[in-house]
Image 1 (cartoon, helix red, strand yellow):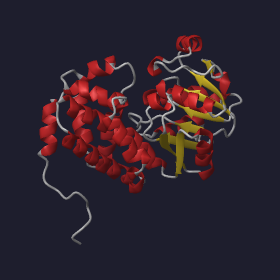
Image 2 (cartoon, one colour; image 1 turned 90 degrees about the vertical axis):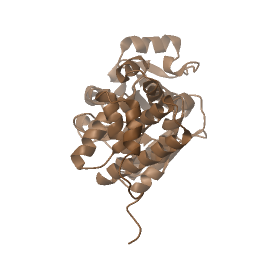
Image 3 (cartoon, helix red, strand yellow; image 1 turned 45 degrees about the horizontal axis):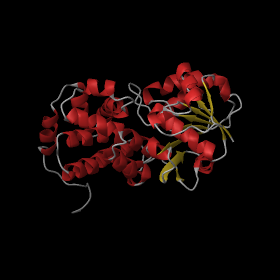
Image 4 (cartoon, one colour; image 1 turned 45 degrees about the vertical axis):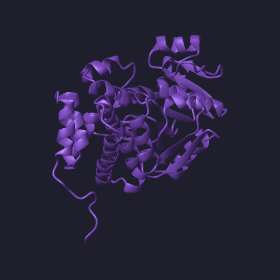
Length: 333
């Protein structure tokens, strides 16, 4: 199958390598012509140090590579997705399936990534999303990984499943795009918060509390927008949340640790050496939750640290001092 991956960051590169290993004809597109040339020459992405790119993998800065493609994978950062989709749209073959592997909520519009792609490409293409606990560093090294391919069309989700699945990368299909995408975006905010907790030297109890209650507020928002609670219990929800909140591969967690240790959010984001998606998702998530009247105290606390200069130890007191409540809405009927 002829496949183009748009976005040459760590995740886009890891997936391009996976698809090449699955014997597809793969082209990796970079927005930066100099980066494309460096990848061609060195056959290594600095974000995946020690991993050699296969010689068969084509690398380009020319969107004409899309002319004959049979599947397009969108892998830029969330803040750049709309621009990339708009730039790519004139080159897309009619009806070619589109896959988003970017996790985020667009600032201002509050749209999910698949919705941004649909807007910029005319809405005539079948669209799917791929999400789950899948650090690029581990996928690139063929460590066993499981993810979810979600689409409103069964045949599109099943196509993605067939194309990506191998003995080291297991893909499950799903029909809840809302739940899968929101879980993927909001786990980055939770990972920042867990990182702050680690930076403050708080314990495992605190981290477990944050992870569990972050899942509760993500579920509330997802259900309000038409997603399903059971989706959040799966790979795209709890699976991705756990790995992002606990692993040192997680850029969001590492950023949170640095903030907890006393650095400013702006310094940390500038020095991280890659995109801290939770920094951007916190704004969109808070705005979206406020507009819908959905209570998301962890997200709101993280937003205040990132953008309002709130003191990190004050976040702990603020969250722990909230009024007592039931854990769930059911029971004692």
